[in-house]
Image (cartoon, helix red, strand yellow):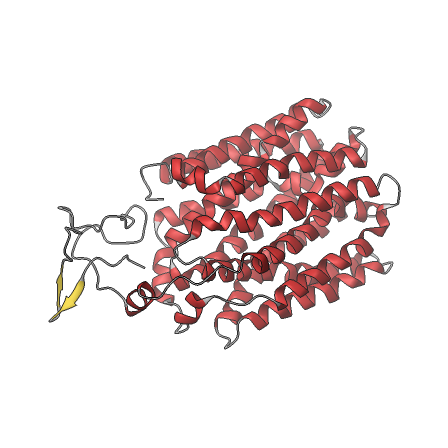
Length: 444
């Protein structure tokens, strides 16, 4: 959506007072053609009825506690799933190949679940009902894991569970942004509670599994999914979503999606998720194979997430000093260094801790920068669709390819090779970003 720069009068565009137009015909503050959101020249568009109406209405209070509760519950459950689910599957008798196939379903469902759920929600009179339905289905399907399931039953249950669990977060991101209209810098302070939930659960379960079998994992996770459903029931969309209830500009969305910088951004996002394949699927097994206790596994995960929390808390200050494009480039370089160090020095607890510290940039920095890119590339009501494509293409396609490739490379050459190749994939992302998304080329 182009930022307003003039008003209509008799069918002609008249520049507003105060010299809003520059000599090049651009509107200051709007993204350039390189950023992909406004033409390079010509008169500014008329102020939309929505913008005029919202500018005269005081900003609504942000329901930060309710929003934060959903992020806390969602990522607390993820804090149990990501580090320990591979160990749970191993305890159920699955080999490395079976674990890679089952874990790839987490990413495979991301290729369709976010987009499908977002489209259904966008066409509903009360889209929040789809959010609550997805959370209820997540809880119901996960309850089946307490049963002694074989590979086929595990596969079928994972499909349903992963589809529902992956479907809800992109929709909730759009719900959160509907409350943050014009106040996007507040996002980090809300999203950080997801990281806090993650680290609390990772740390607690690391200690618990020093004393009890990992087979208890599904029972310990069920209350977290019940909390997720409760949080969904107390949240709803903000005023910005209600004002834009007329629907999205589908043609405009697909035009934006085809722009070179947008394509480059999604390719980089896919490569980042691909490079995370060995980490997301086998990191805990990798540490276990090198003699680390479960409590040490939890500690390594906690190091990364503690620094992730710091980045989200400081996000407003970070973006006041550096552009999203600069942070994106730094996060990609950090990823390449992180996976290379993990491959080369797994026996050194100190160097592994340093590699985990790079999680602050390689994950939190990348994610925070990505939200700014998505807000610029897909403003307003388009953001829900943009979030769906982001999750589906990067986490979905990139995630499933990363999990499957990691499993095969692990089987043939070991974990060190898998992490070394992940570092190479991150370097390819650096090269693409240096050409298409470097600071100064995009208006982000």
